[in-house]
Length: 342
Ligand code: NAD
Ligand code: TYD
Image (tube, rainbow, N blue to C red):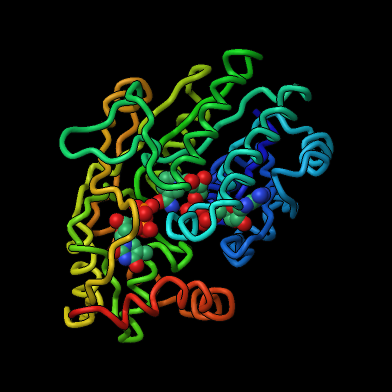
């Protein structure tokens, strides 16, 4: 492993991974390929801007000629795919981009990889491919029953990855991470959205009864698991990566409000998300036993640090919350908030 292509490296988790890898592995060359969609942000990569082993290429993973050029020019031997449309609410409003990037984009990466001698493709997937589970925990062999267009696009990508592994012998691996939080997360996902809205004393739109359950994973732990899997996973291996910290959405919301010393009267119960998965839950038994990975951060300290980061870094998020962001906000929340109860 020498020249690693990190697709989607200007997004939330990808940029954390790039910051980590450039420092931890000075002998690796890290090449980021990112389309810079609304979610891609070069500010996320400012800390590595001058790193000698970092290069940025702007481009679409679904554009074959671009992928061929980047892989050839940088003699890529390893691909780590973070590039995706990643927000469930946007997938409900407009699924097209999800098929384009999450499914077709991964297919292009795989196909160019197999024709150019790339040794390994690691794909960053999600616990959402399993669908919802009332009790117990999903294991890697369980059937995939995705419920949102986002989850279906991620599941479709995994099926194509599997086919390239089995049919062409491409060395692939997959991590299925749970809900991730931390610095530099685009403020449409619940944690950064609610933190930044609460800082401005604006109402927090909690879907339905707020009793949906997610398993919260700190971004450093998520990237640690991807690093370990990238180096150790056997061909075709799939690993769950859970935070081992299940919380109801109302509990996450209350934690954020308390950390900011803001009142619970900011909470608004709004009309639910269509097809809203009730609970995501994974077991880490396999990655723990085979790769020795476990999450190292507690939710309480990591979320408190995250809240402090958004308080200290208004320069980063204030300029995001304009233009296209406000259009999405209006489409998503204006009517729900108008009808909401406290
Ligand atoms: P993000 O939305 O913050 O970043 C996605 C990045 O991909 C952006 O930089 C964007 O510009 C880029 N991108 C989008 N379309 C592209 C294209 N066609 N070509 C090249 N680049 C493109 O997402 P994130 O939260 O950092 O998630 C990264 C990956 O991790 C995704 O694959 C997501 O499905 C997965 N994941 C996320 C979570 C989570 O809680 N955020 C949990 C588990 C898995
Ligand atoms: P989100 O951060 O969008 O992640 P995902 O849908 O991938 O789990 O949402 C996390 C949970 O928070 C999910 O159950 C939906 C809920 N949620 C709200 O209640 N209000 C909001 O404004 C958002 C963005 C999410």
